[in-house]
Length: 165
Image (cartoon, rainbow, N blue to C red; front, side):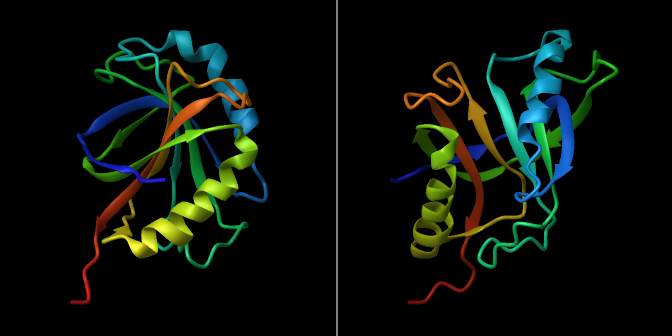
C-alpha cells in the first residue's frame, strides 16, 4: 500500500473531543454525542467528517503504550469560527506534510493498517512522523463497519534528518 504525499493547508475544525487511550477507547461515545449536533455547525465546507487524534509531542509510535492518553476529536471543516455552537470546540489544524493512505474495510482492520504504516512503510520511507495531529477523513464512501467502507488516513510526516548515503 503506497500513500500519496500531500501538503495540507491550515484547516479550521469545529467539533467535540474527549480524552482517551487505546485501552479505554471512547470513540463510539464521542461520535454518538457529536452526530446529533452536527447539523448545528454553520459554515461547513464539505460533508466530510474528521476523526482526529491529538497526541502529546512525546508520544512514541515505535514504543506503543495502549494506556497513553490523547485527545480524540469528531469534527467538520469550517470556513470560520463566527458561529460555533455552544456544545462545540474549535481547532486549527496547522499546515504541513502528510502521508495519505486509502483504507478500505471495517474498523477491525485498523490495527493491521496502522502496524503496516508505523512498522513497515514509515521505517522504509524517507520520512519520520511529525508531532502534528493524525486524522482520518470519513467522506462519501465511508460506511460505518461495512467491508466496502473507504476512508483516508492522514499521517503527519517530515523528512528524515539523518538520511544515510
